[in-house]
Image 1 (cartoon, rainbow, N blue to C red):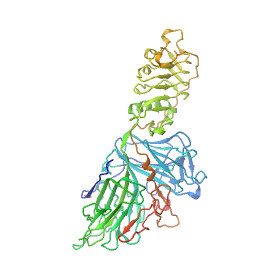
Image 2 (cartoon, rainbow, N blue to C red; image 1 turned 45 degrees about the vertical axis):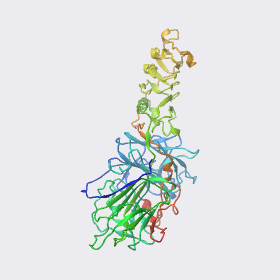
Image 3 (cartoon, rainbow, N blue to C red; image 1 turned 45 degrees about the horizontal axis):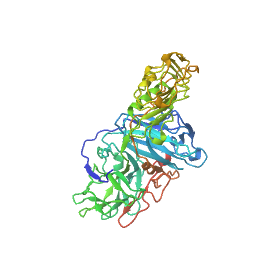
Image 4 (cartoon, rainbow, N blue to C red; image 1 turned 90 degrees about the vertical axis):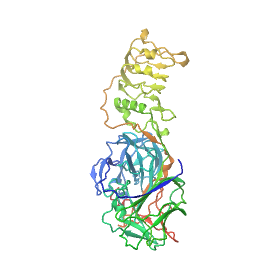
Length: 587
């Protein structure tokens, strides 16, 4: 990805219009309740969204909130996925929260993989509440959020899952082939966390509390137009941070970033008072010591947004708000969002193969326990498929021996990359499907020990290079009947199949699961980057005022990695970001 960057100052002048999220799903994982919290968020139990995993309740001494008191733990399968119905092409915000709470009594928070639509991230939980958030454009009709085990005896879990759709023009300065990973979202000068219902998209804005040399200022405007494309809530513009002296500047430090990364950043500026004719508030943005913007004059009753996209920064990068020579007032900043930009999105499993797997799962309920992308990430493919290594991946093998499948096979003729099909040891009946002989790359076909009947299709008996086993199907016509013989090309090294009796009782077909099973989408391929964007909520229950610093790196609580604001001539180390879930009453 190029390291070039661009920025834009936008003065919002349009008429106010209402905004809302069309998709607004809040899952209390491990719970079976439906309830509305104090933020008017309706929480659902997760049982209708996933069929695997076990529910636990955290120890009472580690209780944080009603939502975070339950969790779902996964001790089987290489990955377990939640599937959420969305519209293709919608931009979504996904937030996954993890509260270990010593539910297992081991005092040892696990590490595991968190996957959004096939994207792998290493998650390290802690004894604090941790959440991960991403924004991206969904390429299919469903999105998947998967938990996968990566370390022996460390089982993945999840406490809450939230999905919010965004307006199509929000965060659109980043190409839809990339995703945004939240690093921090701050409401400077606020003394409380801002989220739904004040923010209709339920973004969590963490209070930024000023330290030495800085002050909080309140906006005198009673109504602030917030119809800019990224729709910051009015509440985050009602406060700001400024310097005491008009000649001082504010520095935003990037020391919390662990290494060089491309970023997307929004800065929001709104004048807090109606200026007299002899007053001017004007400042520029400097990147390190170089000019980075034209003069910014925040409007009263409105706001200016500066966005920076596709700019590569390091932990040593700084952005400074420096007053211009003609300014009579110090600089200010109301709010900031900082994201890390992903690698380019890559295609997921071939859509034809995905559609065929859907038909298999519709026919055989036992297969519905597997979901998410069948081939991606590459180390987390489904147990009963093999995939090609090229992109988009193709399904090259089906290993369904002994799955207790009964009934007839659906048409899989579109899976033309299949080389191996093993259906032995099931209760499949009816004639052997003719489409099997039309698969151009099929080399191995094992139909042994089923209940197939009739004769062998000519498309199979005449197919060169095919090893086929039809033994144990007593209802196929007798071995002496030439119409039942199969021919095996000598180059394949296979044996002519035999027909032996191995009839098993048929079983009734189970009721189909209503859950969608496969996400057939374009899959982003970003792996390492998510390991740095977990946000830990540090909770202080003994004080109503939230004063704990918020750390950005997973597994750490406060201190050196905390973002801070710097006044001219003084490093202000005690600027803090308050608890993200104040008093632990909401999520």
